[in-house]
Every structure is written in C-alpha cells, then in structure tokens.
Length: 367
Image (tube, rainbow, N blue to C red; front, side, top):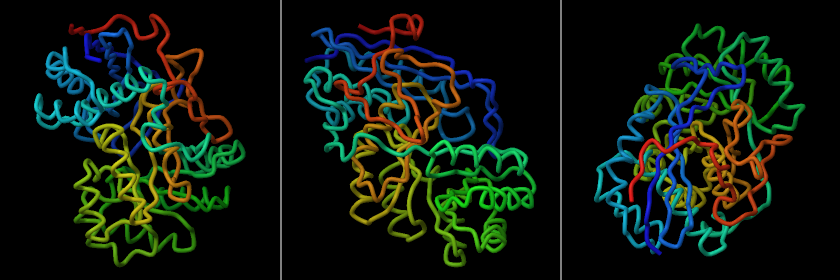
C-alpha cells in the first residue's frame, strides 16, 4: 500500500455561544487543520491538528498548514509499512514542527487500521475498557459562577474538574478554588495555570488552600521554575506545556519535579510518540491525561483510542473540545461526552469518517 494523494482542509470551529478564557487570553473560535491521506487502494486515513491560538504553545494553525504543505509532496508514492517508518520519513522532510507531523501520524494510523480492519486502540496495544472518563475545564470566570458550573458538571457525571487560574488577581484565583471545593467536594481537582504563575504565587496558593485536595497543572512557565519550589509544595504537580517530547518527559521524571502529566497527542508528535510516553508513565506509575488542545471528531477519536489503552489506575481522563464546539465532522458516529464518559469508537481505524462536504474543499492537494 502506497500513499497516492494528500489533501489538506482548513476548518473553523466556533464555540457554541461561549468564550473559553485562559490565563493567556480568551477564545471564541479555533482554526483546525485536517489531513486526508489516500492510498493507491482507495482507502483514506484522516488526521487533525488544532493549536489553541498562536501564543499558547510553539504551534499555530498557519504554521501547521505550512509545515504540512512542505512535507506532503515527499509522501506521495511512499510505501506505508507502519507509522514509525512514516514518522522517520517526515523527520527527513522537515525539522521540528511535531504538532503538524502529528496530523499525518494520526492519519497513517487511521489508514492502516481501515485497510486491515483494526481499531487504532488495538494497534496501540489493545483497549482495557470500552469507555473512558472525561473531565471538565472551568474557564476563568467569576468565582460564584465558576462554582455553579462546577456543581452542575459534577451532577452531570464528570468525575474530575480542572480550574483555570492565572492572568488576574491571585486573590480571585484562591477564592475560586475554595468556592469550587465547597460547592462540589470533588476530590479530583486540578488547578491549571497554563504557565502563568510566578513561583511566589504558587507557594501562596499552596498555603492558602492547604486543606483542599488538588493538583497543580503547569503552574509556572518552565521546569526550572517548578523545580525551584517543588520541595516546598504540599500539593502534587503535573506538567503540561513543558512536555513537548519524550525527552522532556524523561528529563522531568529524572529531576523528580512532577507527579504526573497533562499530555497532548499533537504536542508529542502523534499517537506513536504518545504510546511511548504512556509506557514510560506506566513504568514509573505516573498518572496522566490523554488530551489535545482543541479540534473536532478526528482528534477527539485519536485521544479516546490512546486513552483506552492506558492502565485505568493511571488515566486521569480525556478533555475534549466537543462540549464547547457546535460542529461534528461525522454525523453518523460523532465522538461525544455523555455523562462525563466517552465511548471508544468501534469502527476500524479511528472509527470516524467526515461526512461528504463537511470539511469544505481542500485548501491544498498533492498527488
């Protein structure tokens, strides 16, 4: 089986009457890039990458499409022997830009799975369950309103809550954490600053909320900053934005700066690298999520498939943009959060196929 065609699509993902506020800004729509790889046998594989704006991480939508445009011609005619071989080929076509390469990696997994009648989760080691937990992200808002939404989401069945903090007075963040705890009693709370807090602020939140069980997620901008205060903290620490590669994960573990991870499929370069990190985390009994920044049904399916292969005691859940986005690519088999849970797709490959016309016309094609 060889790659005969590559098509790139640009998809606007509007938020359904909502604003998603984080420490680095507010978002009302996202720009996603979908990749279709067509084999010489006529089978299509689908991949996706959707950075959250141009400043959240070293990734942006225009960069993704530029990188994919650079790499796509070099894929035409290439034999697909496995995802790892394609990833190596991509490294020979372009240095870096793993978030763009991830879309191809996901598409290749989907292509192989559909060609051989295998689910992606089975290609990645086998599912341990038919459903996985999701979790809800509480965006920056008034403390009382945040607590209200938190209670609502716990009632809906979400077992875990992530509280966004940073970019505003620290007193407001502390009040929000306390009110969410009082409103829910949720013992699986995560306080996510998206790199926004100074070390002094982390220490202050840690001490002001000493009686509340939560984990910090990426409280400071760098691993070195977190390492400077790690020994003084009573709350556990998860890394997110600082884990851009397997090397970053290994360094964090060797330094002993974290107790788990918020992992992103496209940040790590795709499902193959994510599976490697999954195995490293299992070897060290480190809990982690299987998320991505944003995206539609394709990236959602990829996250659920890899999450289904994680040791259940280590899976912290899967965050999806789906509840915020009023759009599905696949109307027959959309990936939806229901009662705080996600069903693992049952079809071959990713188990999702975009409806005809759902993505519009390709913005670039290669054959």
